[in-house]
Image 1 (tube, rainbow, N blue to C red):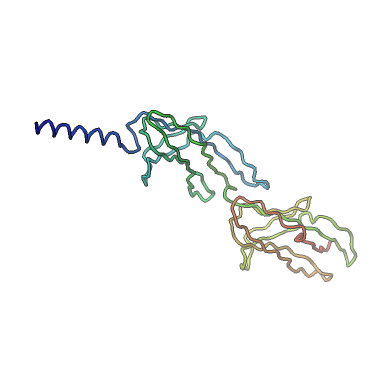
Image 2: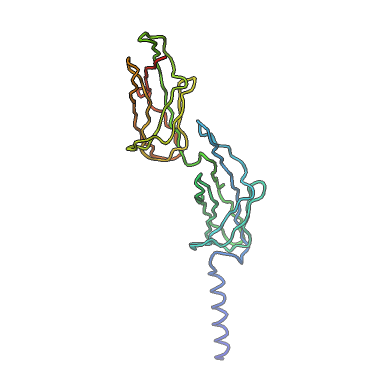
Length: 237
């Protein structure tokens, strides 16, 4: 009788453990979804994003509250991935965006599945490209043109040079020229404080700086300088 009791207790423990199996492999559930790649090209004044299927991209899955991923798969040519043979429970999947510096940033989504269920994860949108995670600043320059003290005309300051530096620095780290429409732009800027400046000339043709300060608070912004900060310069021709 004692042996039978021990046997029954052992079988009960086995059933209890199997009924409370943690998240992971060994079940009949499936977690699946798609990954899309948003490419942020360089030399882009409007930050448009080209979205394509993220083929041959590694996707990782985390079982429950684990600190480490449990498995990884590669997407197919449509950006589709699938993790099979999972027990019921909570799962997190993730793929990586890539900053221009090469730093990897995880993009995550979570889902819960029951026994034998197929869970469709919300699409993961990952990012890459030289302009990803950066901002653009746009402004305008208007000029009056003089020759020997006589005004010869006015209009947008085509080809006039504009500079940018970190606030408090003595030297600029980039410069650009004004376009036909009077617009200049500085791209791939990280959040921070900046000074944008150009030069105007007085009647003696002595150049003096004109400086505007601005703050970029978030990545991925297009910041257009206010109309009242348009640079009005005098140029000797």
